[in-house]
Length: 267
Image (cartoon, rainbow, N blue to C red; front, side):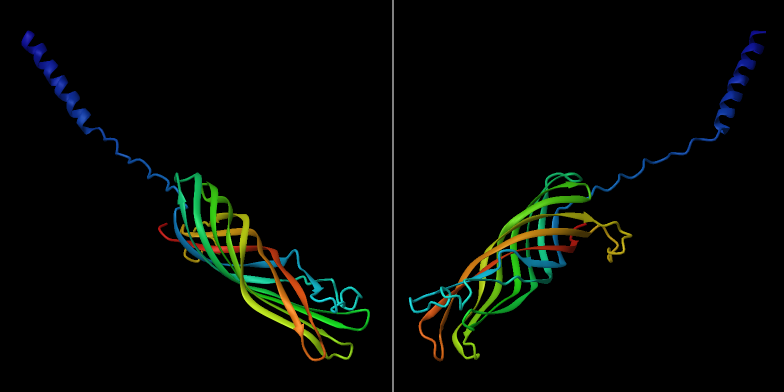
């Protein structure tokens, strides 16, 4: 009897094991891949375009010798507004360092050079009929600036400031009422100063119409800068029947707003 019970128990155990072996096994599901974290670190280059306008833009004039009394008697302007504005466009290169990937502080440096359409000529007629004409031309503006900002993942907000330089040409001519030149002066040089401002930059989605590379490397920025290249005094020396000299003082200050498109290496 005992042998029969033991045989039945062994048979039941074998049957249970065989049934368990026939059950389907659960398939292994690997964990999802980690979501890539965007980083602003690395070198970049790009293009920019926008609008530029001067702020403090009056030309002031004074006689050098007592006999040059045209300003005092109202025949020459003591101050004449010479506002300038126009298109600006160029390119930039730079490098960023991000302390923590994703969100965190970002520091960097950027250099840019742009064409500026800052040309203006203005004439006025004095009380005694004297014609005074001033011309100021700004063909380019470049900067070398530091950048400090904070990244909110794919959005970077930053402040910037540093060295600025620009090519400027100044010209002045005084004429009699009949149009005969009496004083003339001209100067062309590269002026230096500073620029400061801020902006916001956004890493474009890969399917954006502006992202021609269809990669995480393309960023779009909007930026505003104030620049000051100082003042320049240009002597207007006597020509023709003129005698003595005048001095005309020009100013170089303004603001610009622009958009830029960058391609970042290493993304």
